[in-house]
Image (spheres, rainbow, N blue to C red):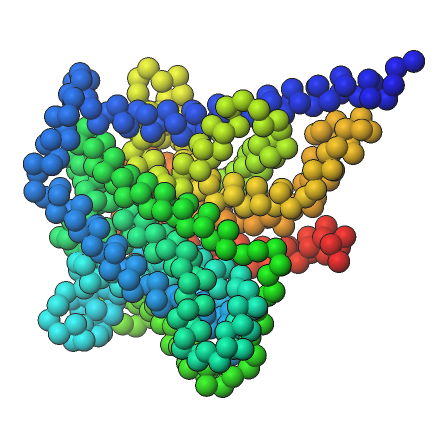
Length: 561
């Protein structure tokens, strides 16, 4: 008779073949919807308008065009200035959340998340109500205009603050208490401990936060479009070249230039992430701060001011959405929410955005988690796993405008058999999924790595197919992470502008694009109303996640306790 090991070999071979097949499907998905479109963009940058080879002529034309170089410099210095403002402020806020004993920390964490739930255009619209040509507080600018670098930087500070604060909260929460005990035993002052222990321990988090903020500002389209005025930046230049001038070749060149700082920033962020991972040993003792009024009260005051500003910006946008006719008739009305008065599509843009975001969340969470599983639990031999891992990390370094432009050039090409996707809801779903893929992939990989590989080994020894183990063991245990991925994709798809600005059609216009069009038409109150509706939908999704997550946690995570 054959042994149990011999009997198990065919099943193991079938499982491994299935995992390898899944890996090839993952490679095909990322190749078609990421690598090939970016390749089409790269090729277009070196072509003539007639399709011939232009060599470096397009790049030479870019370098010798002063206006385009000015836009590149403007993007760099406004992004750097925003990061220099946001990172210290976010560090202080994160320090208060992780190293103090001040009250109402959960409330401050919730308020901190508000900008992530709102489209980037919302703070720009609020600033116009406050400091625009007819703004209530325009006198505070002392003759300067909010339309330009001032408005871009202030709005980006609001937009980027939670991203930096989240990164720095993680960096500060992984401190080793033994270092502080040793410093206290050596009679070091609190200022010296902060300078020699706290800051060095968080330095890689600071680098990562700076890089993330810099990248977000350089690649954002909504804020400079609404409040940038005549101040040129790379993101609006791409839009101008493609939509305004129909110069796709120069648009591709500007897209590549826009991609360059994002790639450099991404490389620095990866370096910082690896360095930070190596700073905490397995014997580290978690730091638990003790109450101290001299520290807690000033930090509480700081958090109150920051929270008031964040809520105030959102409040101004809500108020602006209820004004009858700014700035001449400030009586309140709900007429601005009757979107058919301002856009032929009316409320259908909202329902289309909800449908698109729901499809991105449902399809994306399945694809992301499945690819992460076959990568982590499949065989690691050969070059294929490494190539798929690299491709999965690329979207984080690709700005939404660049990916959208790449989709235009790839899917709109006459020779592409997938051209039927162009102008449909499907291409919006695919673009949004790929654009926000990397963060979700990292979340799924982290959740899967927390599970012991012995689950699969035991299943194989019992001749249980790998897909049964995946469905009955891995998925239920990882449900909280899958829910987090789904809600992240939903919120990101609802609020994105840059990723879909080139791809929507007459019947597939998302709500975030409707905000841009209403603002362009001078309908600021209607634009604010649409932005507030988007914020309401994403907030409801986040609250739903908390409610469902609590139930899922009790049902699927009881074994951890």
